[in-house]
Length: 406
Image (tube, rainbow, N blue to C red):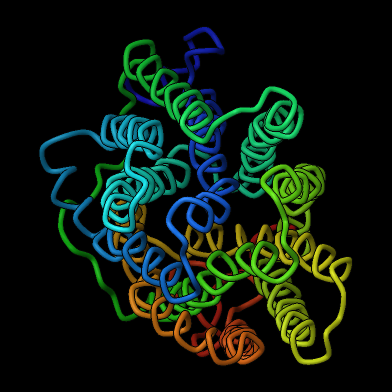
């Protein structure tokens, strides 16, 4: 069905509804896995910093291979690939506790990661194809808020029932992973297959004029990996957080993010991509330096918790990078470039976690100092984004065409 014809469908079967349900389904499995991971691997498999670094390196290999999406969409629709990837993520998460050894955890993590990263690659492509450019920033903000709301429900259930009902890792992984897989199966059967008005190029697209977008993606991937791998691990290793305590922190973070994410869309719409990203990057420089100070100066747990929440709020501003690409991209380039960009985003993720995991054993503060330098480099790159990016005006080095109406 063509996108233009989808307006005749009931609201619950329209493309935007599909995007919202997918956004809500993903965190049920992934956020649970993320919330339980540090306690699970420490309690069950006796992980140390180098082990957690290795785990996340393995987890990011499918992200590095995200360009494989280009070959898969030659034989299946993006929509179908996205939903089936979501099913794989759900099933792999459901059986995580069945493999309580280093090798088993690495294997099941690889499978769930294939589902997660291929879903994310396709999902980003579908969002940029299906959402109108003028409405995209605000809609992306609301979609982010929907994902946050879904995660909040999961975290509340863990906090309220983990100790009181004596839940096991196996039960929680089975329940949440199974729910994600069931929702994805519903999406596969209940929605028509939507056709984008512009057929996507089904080959590798790597264009010189997208170089700034590629560079920002690379830096974002490197910087975010440090946070994903080590911020939560710090809360367990240094401050002794238990499952329900760490989940409580995630819950506070998600509530703040759910409130803030729709505002980010309005901020991008009003102030533009460059200013939004500059605020994000300078804020991350300060946050990562403060993380290092927690180890160097022995600052307390309350500051660590505040920094964790602020960190996530700043990361939510990264949707400006999506809308920047949407404005500079040829419509037919969106799907293949999304796959290539996802691979670029994960180049550093393949080697950084394991290397920084080794550095972590010697100096956790040095790991966060390195992250602050990455954020500073991103700030320098963002200075090159024009106020009104468009095709032919991807950086400040090209002359701008007529400015769009405000």
